[in-house]
Length: 165
Image (cartoon, rainbow, N blue to C red):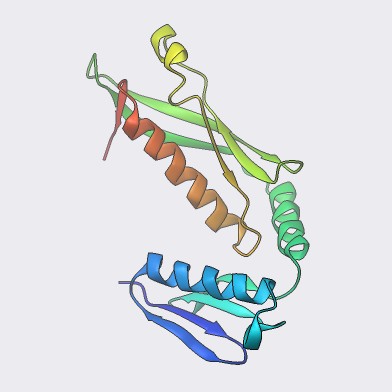
């Protein structure tokens, strides 16, 4: 079980527990107070830890975090795809759905696109495109995990495929 902690520099721990969503909500609320220069949160930093490792941190401007993500993305030597094993609901055959991943710096989004396997799938448009806004307070891996979750949800919601275990 993961342990999450959110800390604001001048206040201390604002969340400690096992619920990722609650920790993320607390982190974002504190970050927004800092960005808005509200009261005691003026100019402070906020950090979210998972098992004592930093998963999100707001220190400086949003551009600093975004630049860090872009630099890490550009230096990544891996093939930039997600590949999900699926079962075709109509035929029962196993296959793979592959999403190509791009970084669109102008819109500050990660985009995942999938070439349709059939004409019916192409017409539905359900799995062909997913995107998320880049959250500069989170690392590249966390942003890509969110995009992966969006892709899996698109597959889950489609009438053509189901995810394999």
